[in-house]
Image: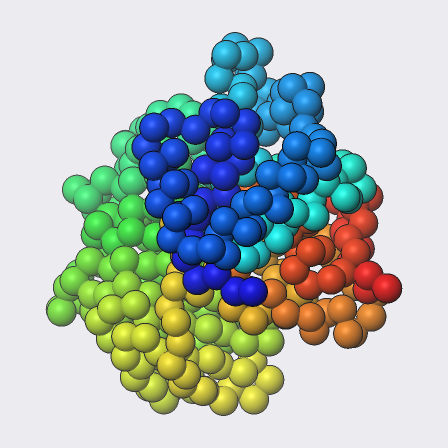
Length: 383
């Protein structure tokens, strides 16, 4: 049975535990009454819950949250609420969400180690032009100065913002490790979201003639319009030339393709001096081996939702998923065989989701078995 209507798993979880607000209960009742299939699914779910097949103790809740936030002792009264938000914050097609709930009690403790793996969070290292390294902390406001003591920017609330009045053309580099993400506002007002295991090199202030940055990894750009000064994103394989637009570039060294996905405006992908124009809703793929360019019509949300805190997958192979999850959760995936790598997954999951819950989701929707040992994740066939 497939149910098209979506509901946040958190609302169902809170309903079962008597924690839902009036607004959440209203949403739940609207969903429940909208379909006989919804009622059937929830009836099965409730029977499992009443039979204690899904059991999470208060101790489990506190231990899970402590893995995510060591300062929990200062906010013990909010532990329960916070744990729910992290461990159960999943948006899925309803059939998938309830399928996970229906079966999760069976193997919950087999992935206990996975709950020690926490989602990524804002963190980065900034390298100044003079070679100095600065750790960027989203919890504190930090004034960034050059070697002459002149303020060139401010880091606050996981966003590093450069001073538009600066005239210095020296280059800085911001690097985001595995398990991290960060935001950046360049001196011209261009906004950049950097994904895990990525780095961007850029001038403190752009010159009068051009705006060039150098990317390794993945970033989403919202470029400030300036028809006189095109904005160019340089990768090891190609360049992306724009004037004012929103787009995503993925260019990891380990990937075989460089992907540029356009949300709005227009961009030109340049390789070996040849420009290929792409339009909104299109993606340019460059094969690193032969430098061939392919243009495809795509659902851009599948390639850009990460900047809004959501993983979106559509018939994606577990191998491709593993690349993304490995960077975000800072783990290494291993597969028992090629058949397991090629199994497909479809769904939408918040990036703050507890890794253990994510593992349950993958197991029940793709019929595989996942074993976790420290930060090594083995995926094998269920039978």
